[in-house]
Image 1 (cartoon, rainbow, N blue to C red):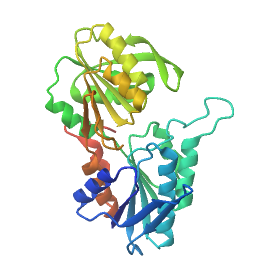
Image 2: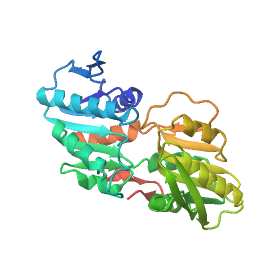
Image 3: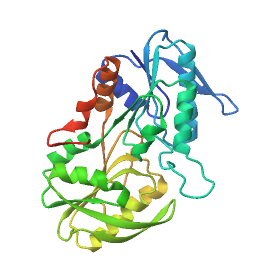
Image 4: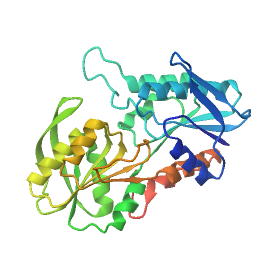
Length: 314
């Protein structure tokens, strides 16, 4: 077994290798003057079970193309099996035709991964569950919930209600509320544009309670900030947000610094430099991904990775 990393999140790849107990595979990735990407695998992979760790975080297209090139290089070097490890699967929000003459880009990315030579996919907290069906190769879909749960349980939160910032995240919010023994509420929202939403109403009781907002992904933080503003106005005491993938552009950081959110809990599926002015707790999913890689390599079940003390993500 060998694990290689693209340039999107080397710290996570190194942490995964440390958990698995093998060194990170040697590769040379550099740009040509015209912007094209050059990749060379610098060790023998013939007959090996190979894993390529690459989040499709911004710059998304660059990191995607880099992954395709790495997979192609490994395939041509006669690797026995290539598993694309995508801690964050980009383009997942484009999973259906919701307007005339638009693409289903999540399916296109699936096709391109298979065409490049991927034999298996390992990913985490897909924005839409049905993306697993876009592949005709095995997909192992993990959840960050066990890692989040362990952190939240240590906080010993009392009088808690879990809130979904939109209808689409209701299933995730319900899972959190069940294992934390908390209430459940939903924020109804209307999206004005890709960068702005308007929160409309709250379904559920949140007055005088501590609130945990849960979502799979935030980029501009518009949904979270608007929901937190409405929740605070309705009498909530303390507000935490729990997000699997926090991309966080400059606009998001500005919004979060001025928001009613007291703490943002997220994971290291996406690499972020140190951020000032916003209280962000970053939990590592390296052990979860590393354990999945070990089990895939040994042809063992990964089902138990969905279970944790007090509940299950399935």
